[in-house]
Image 1 (tube, one colour):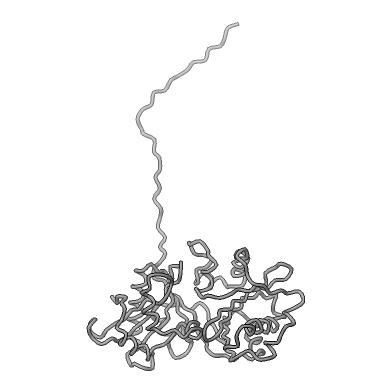
Image 2 (spheres, rainbow, N blue to C red):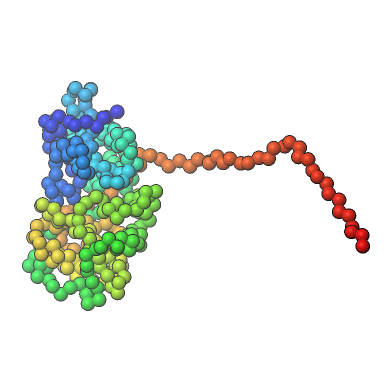
Length: 336
């Protein structure tokens, strides 16, 4: 068993310099590091840091061979793998080390109450195959697009999206319509893998948004919700996710330009946009706005617990077989 411990900072630093970051969002938004996550996990309040698991060569006092980190999601029985080391090209035994790390992390996080482990793994360099062999299943692929800085034309764009399509900031009372949007545009296998609408837990809006801070903007036509744009601003960059219905296909270019202009009102730092494989048409609109592909990754999940169906035992009332006296009644005709 690989116990979660606060590692020796020097050991963690040595491994971290040769590892693979999987938390692409937080890495590019805020410049996180494995050491920072290990220290923040010991803060007694908030949802900071990541659980750290380490394996050693022949015992806890020997040289560390590998380390893995995972961040537990707030109010959810789930965790995201955020870092693993050593990277596959760095160590000849990296594949074996990864198997041991993933198995140990599964046991450790399962002991903390996590029922599902998620990982956004680069689609190249063999990492996806190692995760698959370790029991993870891919449920969707995603491409990350990058824009170094909003251009002057986009920043000066003030013509709006379309005459009949409004973009406004989300309010709490919009939560139910947002859940209906998610159910309508997200394939059922993805919904099942993400356990958003099929979870036994009461649905919460924050559950969908992967525990990232940000601001939601709704796209409406005649009070009908047609899409949502989530903008997460960090110290180093901005991360954007589009959730759009097919009815917005004719105005995708305008939606992208309006989003860039909205971001440029406060800052001109780089912009990242994540586009999943079932969100057709958006990639072309991003390319037209100057975005370039940066990374392709696979979203994967592994269950730490298995749902088992068992026959329920029911108590059935049974009458006693003791003799019950029977009273016979005779009906006499009334004489007139």
